[in-house]
View (cartoon, rainbow, N blue to C red):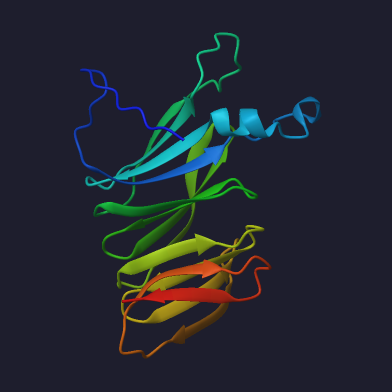
Length: 187
């Protein structure tokens, strides 16, 4: 693994980037299947959340091939959050993007016919500490700083929620490999 830092006038932002999430390229046709793992990780979509409440979605490639197929439009700015975007999480199986802002607003975005639109908005008015999709993409685990935990479906149905009263604060959560249980990290 390596990291490359590039400097230049083109590579700047007018706002702090607070979070990143990568989604590899998904084949569009049967001819491209099965997914070539090397190609999957060489190109795809990078989502960023910034301090101005904007979500950036950019098609990105780590190689210099000129003959590659790129989408018609490769850069999107998704607007709707009222405060800085602190979490961005791809749901690769369902091709959705969840974003959370500092005030607790959660948006689920979906791309349809080359345009991004909001599919779901959830706002409890409490800060989100973590958002994680299940491995199969069918469920979401949302952990809030006030101890509230919610499990919902990819379509927005609430499956389970509870106020977990602990002396510690929930900082993060993750699904077990079989998507049947969740584990939490605490302060």
